[in-house]
Amino acid sequence: MELSTRRSVIRPRTIPFPSGFKVPGFVLRLALHMVLIGVGVLSLIPFVWMVSTSLKGAMEVLSITPSFIPQEWRWENYKEAFEQVPFGRFYLNTLFVTFVRVAGQIIFAAMGGYAFARLRFPGRNFLFMAVLAVMMVPGQVTLVPNYILLKELHWLDSYQGLIIPSMFSAFGTFLMRQYFMSLPQDLIDASVVDGCNPLQTFWHVALPLARSTLVAFGLLVTLWSWSDFLWPLIITSSTDMQMLSVGIAYFQGQFISNFAVMMAAATLATLPLIVLFLFAQRFLIEGIAMTGLKF
Amino acid sequence: MQNILNDPMKRREALWGYLMISPMVIGLGIFFYVALGASLGISFTRWDLLTAPKWVGLDNYSYLLHDEVFRKTLKNTIKFTVLNVPLGMIVSLLLALALNTHIRFRNVYRLIYFLPVLTMPVAISVVWKWLYNPDFGLLNQVLREFGVERIRWLNDPHYAIWALIFMSIWMGSGYGMVIILAGLQNIPREYYEAAQMDGAGAVNRFFHITLPLLTPTLFFILITSTISSLQIFDIVYTMTKGGPLNSTRTIVYTIYDDAFKFFRMGRATASAWVLFVIILGITIVQFRTQKRWVYYE
Image (cartoon, rainbow over all chains, first blue to last red; front, side, top):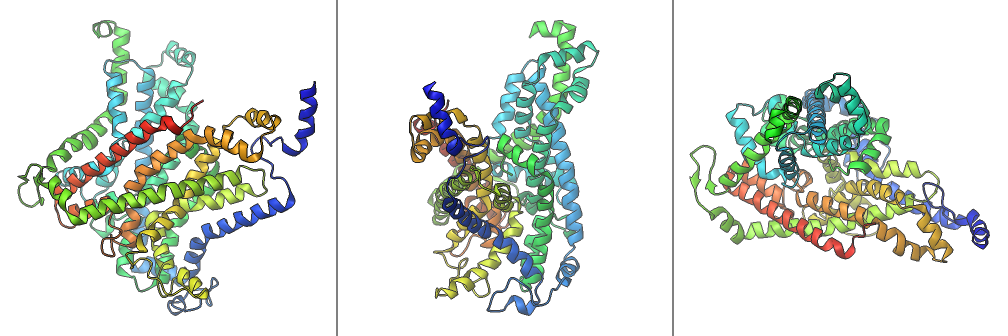
């Protein structure tokens, strides 16, 4: 009884809201806002400066007094970016390669993860351990041999080379296995009674249930693939095969003099991810919290 | 084993199992396990890809051990990691704690802090290179207002690695923040209520509830961000190419340089194995020492 009265006295001031603590006091709240806004400005300045520079004239860029608002808005810089370098081609390459990589990673990881979680076969644990072990070795160890393998297959500078070695995710297999382990056995038994083979059970029963995990994993893989740099850098050589990341680096080497056009290129490369994020913010943040995947 | 093969139901299940894991197992088998074996082999050779590989035993490794530049490379990589990881974690933690309050606009703040995570490292490096530009970059222009002399951020061996670290923290803190926020949400409210009733103040609650219960999350971030910091490449390639005076040359940059600029495949793979051993060693030490500070419920 005494306990409950004490509680009710404290409650209005200090019992936290379901998803956070109440910050007491107007002054404290204001101070916190000031700090948060300050950090926000630091976060945003590079973006603002990038877009602002991308709209300036070649002379204004080199002005001694910095200004965030361009004197004359030169949208032509964006046109120039597309003219000076086959930017459209880089875009299409990146979109295509990312799409196929993501589709492959999702399908193979989900299918493998399901089999490791739900089917019994000799050597299952050994093979699963072998998949897990992949995650412990940094990718640079296999970089040179894979480059040589691609050279022997005549896959250098090709879509196969960009896509196929990047379609197998040990991490994804692990993630999907963990998810499928949590499905109730009744569900799977029911579909077996209905005459489904394991592949059909996987496709019609398990996969639809895993939708949110798949979306989170897919988004993270998309971000990783979009920014992927070292692999496309070493295996592509012709301009036609380049992805955006390598294209930007190349652009920087070639046209270092015109900062405005370069910032236009950087804006174009950054924009799609930010748009994607704005639409899928909730899934992405949940996905990162859930998986912790670094892309 | 024999039983499974005799029972037609179980045999069928096993066959389906092999079928469904086959793309993953074959893919990783070729592009990981075959490559891993080949990599170890190549690291014992001298090979420029034009002439036949020549067996040199441990020469590549002993070269690396004695090479002045590679030692500096190791030092830079470790320095970058040792500074980037804790500083980044502190920023992430502070941001997460501030946003775990019921302050207004917290979703807007979270969005803004998270934006840098979404950028393509190569593209945003180009932007930072421009910000760091000694003559026309925003940073020096602002500093000039405060009377600071022109600093050549990326061309001065004293500043270059700090410039990379600062940018890297800018780019990565939002990621840690999101994970820590999730960790904070998982701490049961009852603990705070109970502590409150016992008269524990905010500082006490932070050090006796929040921090201990957050240690598994912090441990996770420590492991993953250490591993990725040790593999830093993209921003080095775009911003400094390892310079000036090798002050930002990192292991992965050296691997790239050796293999694809100088075609020293043997030495490049040997460096990659050194990196692997370092990562493995540090990770094992981190797991061993977690008992001392990581608190599992």
